[in-house]
Image 1 (cartoon, helix red, strand yellow):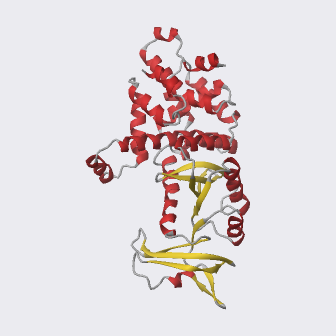
Image 2: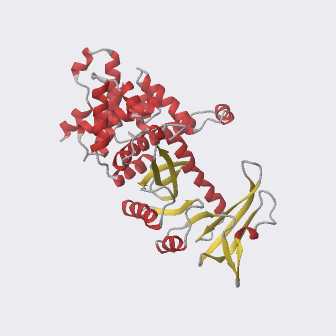
Image 3: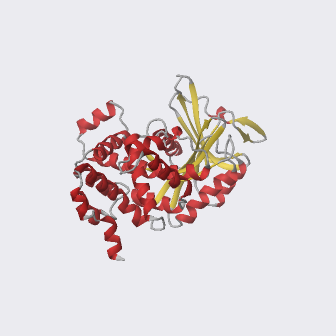
Length: 393
């Protein structure tokens, strides 16, 4: 067994007779492949190798379009042959979402309690609606994808679909405490609030301004509680009020929206938090995550894949690539001095963009030192560094 594992990572001595570009390509793929083999041991080795090539290509091209990936996958085969290989991978491989989620949490070194964020993203391809319900983790100011569900409809999710994702998380991570579930105005409902309370999941969910609540023997719009606030003013109610027949705490603030018009951010919670609005703002991390997985990063919408099982596989690849990139971004930022950080903030370069730039340069370069460092902090983490280091020196 030991010799079999070593054989996976060791570069064949015959490779030194090939040109340097081939050797660099094999070295990079072996780096990605190493940890995938350790963590996804139930997946066929050849398919893991294809997976490693695809993750590298996704980062290089910033797209999930299979034809574009074929252009940068540097193996001795024709483009049509490579494309058929990728098509087979996408259509035939079945990933265990719980296993992938455990892998990503281990990469992020999450062990204690976590904030979860639930949201939905959708787009249209021809007449087909792509509608994804996502449960993400709040990690160091960024959203990390964990579980998702592709829905056969255009509109909002229902109670069963939401509970399915939360149940998957609870089953996969029974020892991890949920500090809070954050969600936007779409995720409301009496049964939903009741179920979250039964599961002992604290939540902080935004409601619409025209939402009706009970005030003694009559109903009133929830916005009436905050009309007298100044701009940026905050008001917290320390006694529960009935919201959809469920006693909840209410907090709100008056703000100006993107159009410079007065708006309100009003949240309800089943726990009496010190500052529920500050917790709720973490919800924007999943919005940034969606943007980085789509138009600002890996161009998820460019895929013409519509079948759910195939799209699930593409989401798995993007999730691994995304987490690797943000971990690199965190590492690069931690080495910056204050002046460099100010320039970074002034230019509005996100941690994701910072990590993507450096990782792309490392993967496109024949120099291996940077890639060796990035392997240690990315999805490769600590698991394979002792075995992988000789490959990258």
